[in-house]
Length: 443
Image (cartoon, rainbow, N blue to C red; front, top):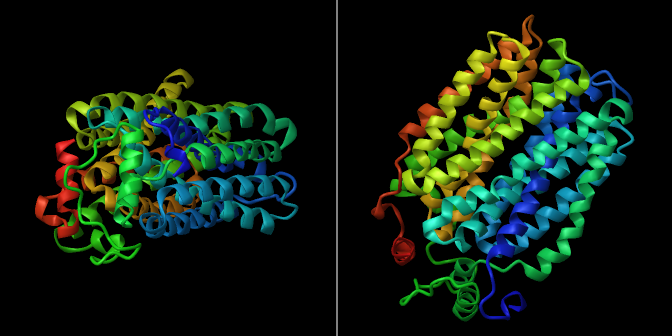
């Protein structure tokens, strides 16, 4: 437990490390959409619209595999190990993507990159949530979750400046800098005290809690004797008893949410280019969408500690749907910029607050599994998004058709979210989590 050797250590480095890595996560996710106008019909791959959509979906299938793998293993091998492994894999994947000589290798390296990305977000949210104070948890998570849209802003900004003249490779190569953070993660990132307690290492769990100023339970929950608890897999517990329906509804919400986000971020630059905007200007609309996501995350996080995340998720989806329907009317450029900002504010920003809701919904022993599997199933929506978008973009009026199509998916996300209970019933949990839930409430 060298990461917890000194008493009174600040929790800020935990949040900062999660935030920095999520910036890289968002950068990696945005890089494909931001470079798509140069990849379609351009050197060296000469992609068609249909093939570009298929490549986007295939890469996101790697993200699905990464999310499900992390969701299955994190509560067994620890948040810290999965976090470090995820950062290493997607950073190496991005560097290899920048060097890919053929389209087949480009696709393979994109799949590898997205596999690493898939394991990072649920682990980062689980860690940040566990180390946050209950009274400021949403604000803390809100800060950490500005990472992905800020990374997307960075990718869109860099692409708008270099793609037209230098092609797609510099955008992917720049992500390799995050490898410099890996030694810092090894040195400073602590392990989850709940994970340590669950595997039977109560002494280390108590040490981490006291080191970082977290409350130590007076009567800790019964710990498992090893990675395989007597109550079975955390993944199986998500679908057991009274948790079954809420879990399925949460999965449905993330499906429509990520379908909307990844459909828009993949195709927005291409749609704007087909609507008459130059390459740099079309990518700038993606930058505006991501800026809206940052603003939406911060505002919603500041309100979630007071009102809870659920109503803010619903309002965000509705806001995004209304903005997209207005975009479908093809207004003047100034109004279009504002509407794209609002679409990012409500759509992508809402996805971040949905992560906060899921982190609150499940107890700590199931939190990483709950997030990993919700985002994993949601990745099915992310996989559908680029292919669905390719079909819509191929029509006669791509801007109106694309905006309307994704307004519908945003509305569906709001409807499903409205059916999810604000919190799981106390009798929904297995006996092994009862003390843990009581501890969360007491905190």
